[in-house]
Image (cartoon, rainbow, N blue to C red; front, side, top):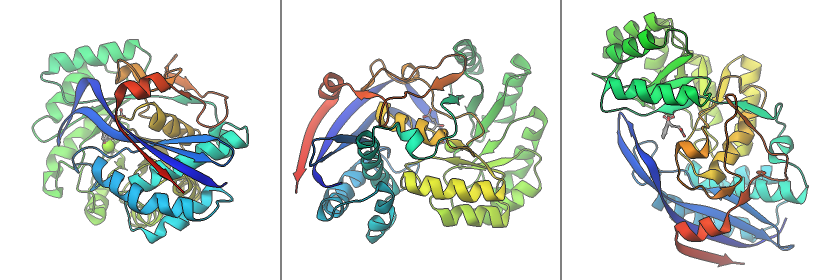
Length: 369
Ligand code: OSB
Ligand code: MG
């Protein structure tokens, strides 16, 4: 592959409903669609998944743009690429900045898959073409409203419900949901809102038959998560803690969790996901694909990694209509009977809706060789 041109499509899209976590509200997505174009005129697409503020990881939409424009694009243009799996290593010249790397690397994977005339999920070794999906529900103003939202999501077929929790909105909240829905697969996500000293509260969650508790403690608390896991029946799932293959090794060696939420963007791209999946399979750790409230391009990449064999639990990849009045891909992501069926077209398998791209675009940066 000889990449000749890279376009940064800067977009701003409003969510249908604000998404509220222990850290605050997300109301719009200000981000970049990265389009890589090669000498034969093929295009591949990736999406920056950092938020506008660094609450989830240290990256933001603006740092993504800076790192992509100033450092990653020059590395892509400087030398031909024989396979997209080379880029992870080429990008090691840049420390961290995984979401910036993932946006560019995944765009090259899309382009490569299109040139090979293969769906991306098959190219990366996907083992299934239908993905079980759950839905992640943000904090709501009242328990009554939460129960209503759950009701409407279950009616749409989602196979698992994830609730956001934070101190003061936890045991009684989950108790009310469990009472109303005694049988549904249910889990909670704290986005690092607790400390080990909150163990009494966290242990009370053991009574509700939760699939897992996601990221209860801080993102660098591997030792504390291990201690907590020993004192909990419910499996701990790590999300914010996992940025690298080595983080996965640490988590498994210390027994900090039993499950890992993998996001392609958080671990720096598809090659790193493949390596992590391989290691998790050898060590019997269950994986599932999380979400970043992405638009359609990022979502398509998430769905592709969710097809890998070790991804055995429902993904957080809800339908486009869960987030957007209008998405930037055609067709949009649809959930039927609790599953997304992966498109069999080459690359990410969804077309970019160029009209929608223009509609949401606030700026376009073209970088040529
Ligand atoms: O912690 O998994 C998370 C959304 C934004 C940032 C972090 C998380 C989430 C979600 C929703 O839980 C995932 C989605 O629906 O895309
Ligand atoms: Mg999470």
